[in-house]
Structure formats: structure tokens, C-alpha cells
Picture 1 (cartoon, rainbow, N blue to C red):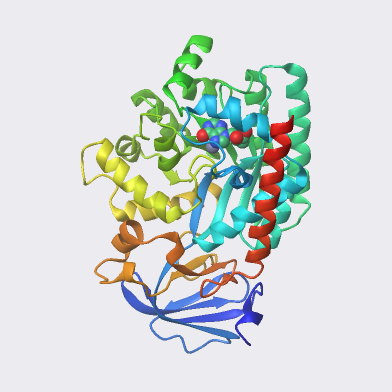
Picture 2 (cartoon, protein in one colour):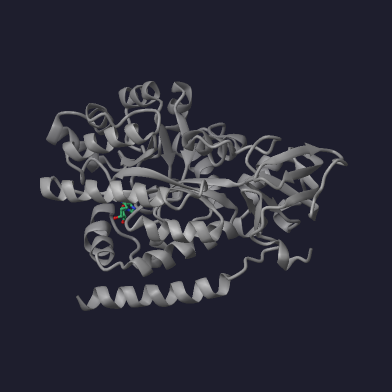
Length: 434
Ligand SMILES: C[C@H]1O[C@@H](n2cnc3c(O)ncnc32)[C@H](O)[C@@H]1O
Ligand SMILES: [Zn+2]
């Protein structure tokens, strides 16, 4: 089999000469999307393709647990603003002009960027998610896709949003692709009514799918929630039934001790988005030390590419680790191993995926970081991956046992970049004319 034949096919693959947990190992992918064996010398195999890692580092694929994939179309469109002003004056007015085609090409661009930088799964919240589903299906990456409900407290709007939510779940399921999973997303406590939050919670539980929500991102959100409902946002979500084991809450910056206890008790996953929080100057970091002590499952996400402005989980891991040390004035907080775990295993746990670890019987979602100056010398895999490596150092990305990128090559990348650039310019032009 030649190098170009290998893309997009689920066939048995042997990866030789890779550094895994500090030892040179071989990894056999069994051709069904699973890791078949890991060992120093795998002799019993029927590999159709052999990758010589040449000493590359093997890591589990990154799991980006909070993003809005089509927002790459608005990368660099509106920067250096406060969150609510950014959303209400720039982002929402432009999003009102998004077509299915825009969303499709925005999601194609996001999948391309994530594959390029070593992400194999993402948890997405946006609109027109069938178009995102088509892009994910074609890209070969794994994703949980949720329609974002915003009803603004209007009952008629809630009813129409609920119908869109139901049809989105049905349409995502009709792709019959286990890599493309449906979820449910009420946007936040400040944009969704009590009936909207309660309906989303009940619906997610009935369908047994994840619920993805923004939570306690800013101090204002907390103050407004207390003023409106006499409760802090986690207690209000709990009152509406939203806090349960499949709840994935993005940001979780402005939490007090009671909030943390509640999230731990309900088994909620909290997603740290350090770059977006720092750029939008939320003035608070997710309280990782207390959450870790309380046993909250903490995962990692980039947020959208218009507030980050990239979807590179390697930058996110480094930022998470150094922000936590800086914010808590303690260099022992979030060691490199923790940063890697929140970027892989903990996301897999939240989505109920048998991924995030390279071991036999796990999903064959993994990446290779080829030999490059950022990986020399090699005292510690975790340290180099978190503190030195950039996502652009990822050389090979494999999802579901299928090679999506090899030696930095992703088939079709040029067309996606050209088309997404054109679509973004046209979207901004239409929005400006309105
Ligand atoms: C899905 C909707 O959420 C909007 N959004 C993007 N980033 C953020 C954020 O940091 N907080 C709240 N809402 C956000 C996005 O523009 C969509 O409208
Ligand atoms: Zn977000």
C-alpha cells in the first residue's frame, strides 16, 4: 500500500518505533477501530500498513470538550472586547446571517485545524448542527454535536427551539455513524428560560445523551442569576434538573465552595477554557485545586476560534497549567501529567468513550509527535508535551483506527482553507450590509 492509499481506510496498522510512556514500543491497530496490542515487539499481526515512528512520541488524541466549531469563520473578526459586548454587538448579529453552507465550511475548517493539531474528539455547541455533522462525518474525526438553545425567556421561542433540538438529535442519529454523537445544549442561565433549562435536562436524560452548557463564566452572570432567582448559577441549574452525570459545564470560573460541592455531588464535568477566559478577561480561573480535591471531573476545551483564537489543545494544556500555577501562586498546581489527563482521559470519561489512553481494547484514537527540536532532549514525555510542544508539531493523527493525517499531510486541506476563507469574507460582507 502506498502512502496516499492509507488515508481514510480502517485497516490493520502497525506503528513501530514510537516512544510511549518513556519506552520504545509498537502499537497494533486491529482494523476495527480499536487498539489490538501494545508491546516492545508485536510479531503476531496482519498489518496492511506499517508506520515507522522513527522515535516519535505517541499520545492519546486530544479531546476538546468545549468549542463552537463553525466560529473559525469569525477568527480575528472581533477581538479585545468584554464577553457580553462581544456577543451582543459583534457575534450574535453576524451569526444571524449564517447559512447551512457557511456552517458546513466553518466546521470543515475546524475539523482540519483539530486534525492538524492532534485533536481526535470534540464536544460542540452551535446551530444548524446537521451541517456540522456532515463535516465531521467526512473529516473522520469524532464529535458530540449539540444544538444550542437560546429562548430569551420567550415561551413561543422556547417551543420552536425545543422542536429544533429534537429534530437535530434525530438527524444526527440518522447519519448512523458512531463517531458522530448527539447532545443537548441550553446556552446558559442568562439566555435560556427556566422551562427551557428544565426541558433540556429532561430531554437529555430521556435520550441518555450529554447536556452541554456554559456556566459561571463571568462575575456578572453570577450576580444577575442571584438577583433574578435568589440562587447562584449551579444551584439554579440544579433547581431546573440540569446537573446530572452527563452534564458538561464549560468555564466554571466563578464558583464558590458550595458550588464545587454541588458539582461534585451531581457528577458534573467542568471544562476549563483558560485561553478564552484570559482573552475575554473573566478575571477568575476555574478553581482546579479545590475541584480536584472535591473529585470533580475536570476536562479541557478551547472554546470557539473567535475567542481563543485557535483550536490547538497543546497551547490550551500549557496555558491551563501555567495559568493555574500563576492564579493560585503555587507551581505545584496542575502538574504536566494532570494537564494531559484533563485533555484526554477526563474528556473521554465525560462523553462515555473508551478513549483517552493508549492500551489494548481502547479506541484507536491517537497521535504521533514526530522528531522536532521542541522534543529534544527527552527527559519527560509529559513535560515536553505540555510545556514545549505546539499542536503543529503533531505529525500523524489517527481516529477510529483511520489515518487522517500522516507526516503533516491531510488530503483536501488546501480546498478547505480556500473555501472557508471565501465563505467567511462573504458572511462578514452580508452582515455589514444588513
Ligand atoms: C453557541 C453560542 O454560544 C456563543 N458563544 C461563543 N463563545 C461563548 C462564550 O465564551 N460564552 C457564551 N457564549 C459563547 C456563540 O457565539 C453562539 O451564539
Ligand atoms: Zn463557549
